Image (cartoon, rainbow, N blue to C red; front, side):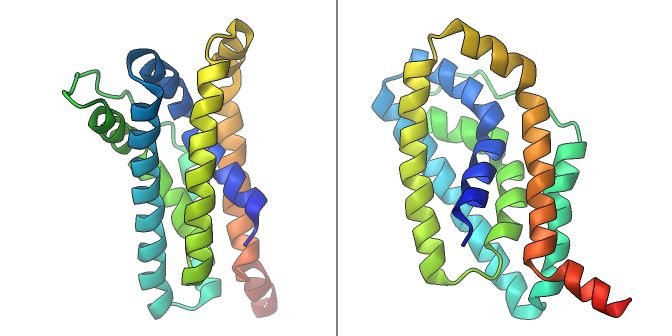
Length: 187
């Protein structure tokens, strides 16, 4: 398991949501934002893993490398989503629903090719790692959220950075799955 790819993927997939988290952190307690966001992340990573396992039962690993097209497509497809601003009664549910509505498609399409073919033990490690990383990110965002220069930089460059990382993840999936070497051997 390439932990740098997991970190880069997590940051890229959630980069746009970090802005929303900054807003949610101003409205709700830190604990509630962490719990809602953590639940959402764990749900989507688990869904990606299990979908990948089902595909892996029927297709060879090199062929599953074609799934690398999903993150590349996400990078090239301009799909700016606007979260619902409706207030819910429970802050944890509000954060969870907001995250799932904004990030479900991206997370599933990006994490699915990365987690396809990963053993259950590695999946549990990834889940634990991503869970801890999620908590750290929210705490850091709470601290960084008040710094004006950070806010301006993210507003200006986050979209292009996210696209570059998505394309990199897609290319990594092509290479790591053996798709590229399989295609070269066919030629």
